[in-house]
Image (tube, rainbow, N blue to C red; front, side):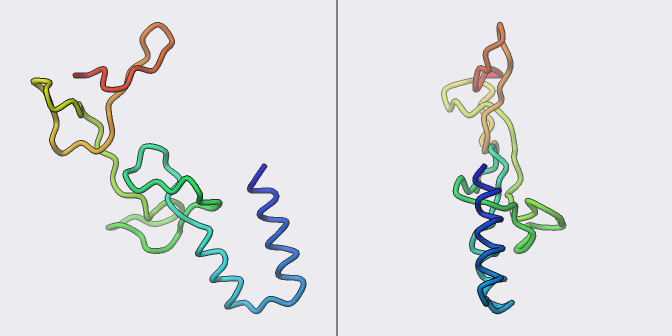
Length: 101
């Protein structure tokens, strides 16, 4: 719903007399990483990023940092120091975070 409202706002803003440069700046400031598990997720982003890509990525959400799933419990024997997102599994229909630990 907020994307529809945002799009309507952008259209009205553009019609009223916004320059292309100002509109471009507005779009860039409203975009960001929208992948929930990414370390640099931006919950306030209204559009997936397409600039400032990480590594060889391109397209939407290309600014998202790589997601490395693993055990994030430092006391577990299989603790994965390089992971930046907890592994999860469905157990009896419930998603259990760090279930691989």
